[in-house]
Image (cartoon, rainbow, N blue to C red):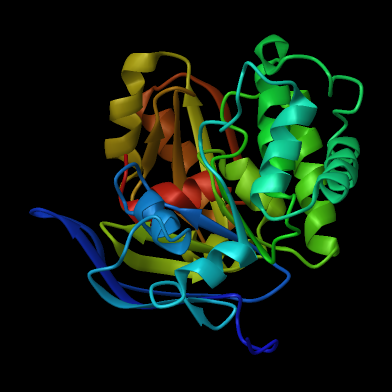
Length: 314
């Protein structure tokens, strides 16, 4: 293993399931000691790529390397270098938290005494010591997720793959896990993160890749991707929900891209690289059309704006 090589290299990878193309010549590089965010709509190919990296699937074409090790030819070695935490915690409800972690430690090849010591270390690190001797059946969802992470960290992995790690967690537990992930990266672990929470990716990721229909459509730092939508975003929230469609038609052509609709937030956003002139033009059209609005302003684009723009969603 070459220590200067990227932690992950994905080269022209293809994968299909029957007539469904999941990955279509994907290329991605992830540097060591970073958090790499992988974004895409449901069905974009994120989970397929994650499973290939975790040696659970074989690509139809192309090459994938972890720490310069081929994941197909040397799958057993790759498994010793990585840890994978899926969307559903893989824990045994009828064992205690300590028994779950010690079992994984023993399966990883540690002797009994070493397994106990290592289990104690990771349980303490994830604030589970007080609950370690309780049955997992009594754990909350957040505790189960932390226990699953504790088990994945038994082998001190070079690469930690987190597939939507905070889905369903309350805000406090989510913040605690974010802080823990940041600690891991400071200690030298590389993290590949998929998430439906773009705020999570914005906070944690050093670089981001956006994939659509199995292809890479954008990559870069969060700020670099924001620049793809223009310098700023005009946001309009109409007083009446039925005016959303009118706003979209009215604002089309004023910005650097098409207006985007957030139906849940009942708002329309418009990317622009001319903050003041565009805001004034929007205000004039709103006044001329007699549309009542609850809010009109300018802000920096969020990753939600970037994601919706890049994937063409409305």
